[in-house]
Image (tube, rainbow, N blue to C red):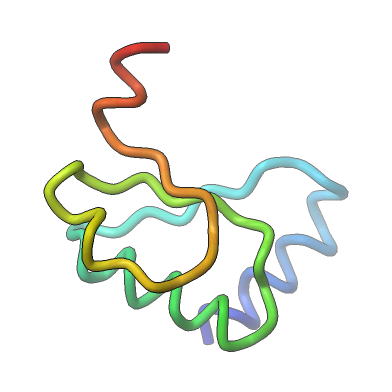
Length: 70
C-alpha cells in the first residue's frame, strides 16, 4: 500500500518533494524497507541519532543532529 501511494504521488507531483511521516523510528524503518523492496531507492530518512546503527537499507540517512547544524 505504501509503495503504491508513493508511486501515485510521484506521478502527480512532477518531481516535487514528498514527505512520509511516521510516529516512531520503527515505523520509519518499516516504510523504508517497503520502499526499498519495491525498488524505490532514491529517498532520504530522518531518524534519531540513537537509531542510526540499526539500519541496513541503502539510502541517505539524516539524523536530528544533522538538522541542528544546518
